[in-house]
Each structure stands twice: as structure tokens, then as C-alpha cells.
Length: 241
Length: 50
Image 1 (cartoon, rainbow over the protein chains, first blue to last red):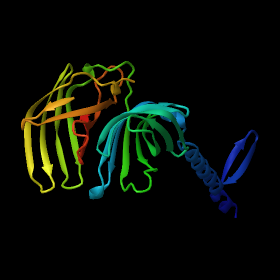
Image 2: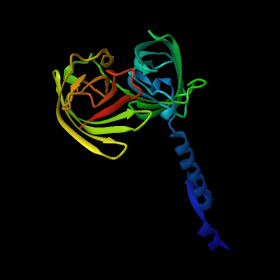
Image 3: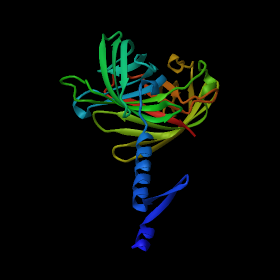
Image 4: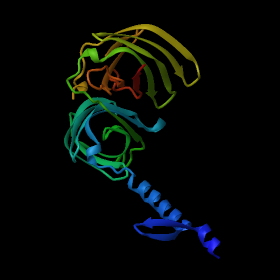
């Protein structure tokens, strides 16, 4: 009996007295400690994790039944609850620049967020209600957001997808910020046959860019093109924080 | 950004750069073709620094 007790118990020395404790109890306590340590380490998010300027690429695709839409732009998040910015927008066959007149956002602890942005522009006012998720949080700031528009409105069959990436400029941009070789993927969002191209841009850091692309159309025909020359008149204001 | 292509066509892009940490070059670009807004086709894309 005494041997049995020795086998299942450990003695903890508390001063002059030794306290026998079952080893199984020690294991249970340790497991609980590890479990709670893991739970407390779970990351939670706030609006402070979405802060600074983010570049946007927006695609509105509705298949063959409607015109396609797209936009690029900049959203500036203040890290609290306000978003400002603008987009260069193509929708229903017209191009305009729309500026946010009023914008708010929130971020839930699980990394999901929502934003409401009211725009003014030459083609009239509009409002985007956006659902997003944080991505690649580094130094407490999300490096990108994956987003969709959730108020596309009755009669609009298109899905709107938005990719936002932190611009992270500490000083205003110049052409020197584009220098070297960039791999490129272009998509033509069409009502009929689709087309894509993959290739490179090579920027000189001043004003010129050359490109080389291979095009692919729906029928599967590849059309290589190369030695194309381009000029960059100026860095657009979208590049400035 | 304006491209004069080898097939005599042209493309004009509006773009935004991103991931330009410190004074380094931008690591990404997002592009929208803006020269044919009335077209039923819209061209967009992204570029990543190699």
C-alpha cells in the first residue's frame, strides 16, 4: 500500500513539511495552464490596425448581361474611425474621379471590418458599403485588405471586389519610386471573349518604361509582344500619401 | 502612364503604387486602363516588383 502511494504521488517540499500531491493532478494543472496561455495569446484587432493610406483596385464584373466597371484610388484610414480618399472610376461607360465626402469604418476583434464611404463626383453622388478582412498585419498595421461591396443595389448583377494594399510612403512619391522590373498581370473584363496578358514593366526611375507581354485570349491563342515603349508624363497624385 | 504598343495601339493607365517602405521603390502597382472608358471592356491589373 505504501509503495502504491509512493508510485502515484510526488512530494512537494514547502519549508519543513513535505506535501504529497498526485502526479495526475500536476499534469492536469499544467495542461490547464498551457491551455489558458494559448487562449490569452489569441490576437484581437481594432481600428488602429487599419491606419494610413491604402491603394485600391476595384473590379465590378457582371458577365455578359451588363457593362463592366473598375476603379483605382486611395483610401486614407485614420486608425480610429474615419476614412477619406478618392477613386478614378469607370462605370457604365464613363470615367470620373469620385471623392469621399463622408467616410467611417470599424474593425471587429476577429479582423473583420466594415466601411461606409459617400462619394461626390461629376457623375453624381454614391455610397459604397464595404466589408473587408485584414491581411498580413505587421507592426500592428494591416498590409492589405480584401474587400467586397455589399450594397450593389437592386438590378445590379455585378460583384464588386476590392483589393487594398498599404502604400506606406513616408514622403511624397516621385518617379524614382518606380525603378526596376515589375511582373504584370492584366485582365480585360469583357461581356464576351475574355483576354489576359502577363509580362513585365521595366521602369527607369525617371520617365520611361518598356514592357514585354504575352497575351492570351479565350480561344487560347498566345500573342507575344515586346519592346513596347511607354512614357510616364508624371507620377499621378494617387501615389502621394 | 502611356504605352505605345508594337501593334501601333496605345494604352493609357491610371495607377497607384504601394508597399513603398521608407525610401525604397514601390513593391506593387495597381492599374486601370482609362483611354477607352466607353468600351464595354475594362482592363485592370497589378504589378509586383521582381
